[in-house]
Length: 236
Length: 258
Ligand SMILES: Nc1ncnc2c1ncn2[C@@H]1O[C@H](COP(=O)(O)OP(=O)(O)OP(=O)(O)O)[C@@H](O)[C@H]1O
Ligand SMILES: [Mg+2]
Image (cartoon, rainbow over the protein chains, first blue to last red):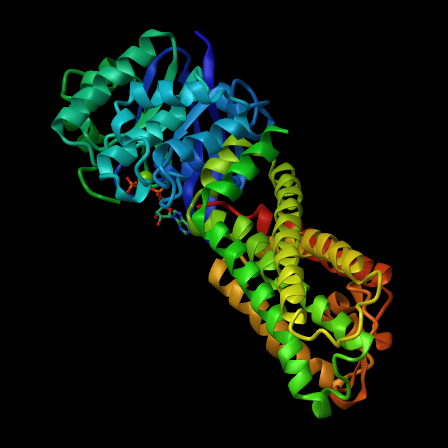
């Protein structure tokens, strides 16, 4: 199997505090990997280091053996949804995507295409700040697939989605993955993750505590039970 | 090219930028349009009236007064990315931050030129209208319109660049804009009073010098021959921009993006 994403002894510290603490882990190509951990475990920080928005204090975070910053035209290889979404409230959803499309050399027709894929066509011309939380999340997903990337990095994409939205997201991720894409997705919705992911990667207090195929990590329990055992059942 | 196109879209999609253009046009047109009236009614204060060419020239030179908006647009192009959080999408799409900054500086120069050419043009037209009420006034000097437009183009580009540099250094948009305004309209004039000789090297003195005017009003303590020649003033001002931008690249541009 090919390794799509690799963390090598990654450390990100804020002052004396290590938000990510010597994390080494791998994400296999063509699989959906659930990135799990209690609040404050360091998931978002790890992902922000991976895509070059935060500088690692030491160690490495690489995609296809390269730093994100060294990928040429990264949007065509990696699509990202972070907790901070990166869109301008005063612009329409469509205008926001057109700004990104222009920068990545992606034709405007693709903007309409992805808006349709996330079922936002009707709201495309409304100001982003007037979107509901779920609509903002869909817009962020549209931005992530704009360049038809082979890797998706999603930080809590289910956040703010209603049950129908979560079901929609599950189908959406599966259809993306069935095309051979690699998806690294963080979430707190463990029952949902158990249905969606192939592999899991669990961290706590910035450290790796479990990694591997879902069945192996679960060991007969549900994902939630396994997670609570591994993390001591407490929030860090 | 693609980054420049993206920056162009950021410029024209945000309505506030159009608001700034309109404000620049209004400021320049109103300011220039009423200057003949003010000059004619306060001959004693200024020491000259519209029967003198330098007075008429100074009317048209006022058309350049929208320059503060070129700086503000530059600031907004950069600091706005942090204010609205779009820096995340921008740097995900183009992770090489220096390249993003270079394109932003380029687009800010274009934006500054557009704002200045349009507002200065409007100001000159308003000046012509204002002057039409004074048929006995002196003729403007032959180069004044060309000089003013050249100054508009150059100052627009330079000030747009300085704006981006400021916005990169001070990520907080409000702080950067208010800081620039306070500096230009409060601190700079005070420094000018304290050290008249150094004044020509300060931004507003450089902007004045850049316009290559020829005005002497001892009553106002204003004599353009005290300022640097246009070319040197432009270069010094660009030098400020380079220093700001370099500091920004070395410091704030390296910082993590939230
Ligand atoms: N910019 C920052 N400055 C200081 N501390 C930070 C910063 N960003 C994150 N942290 C700290 O790093 C730790 C990890 O935060 P992070 O957001 O990565 O957690 P997370 O696993 O994504 O949590 P959640 O599930 O709540 O999203 C937290 O203790 C947080 O307070
Ligand atoms: Mg998080």
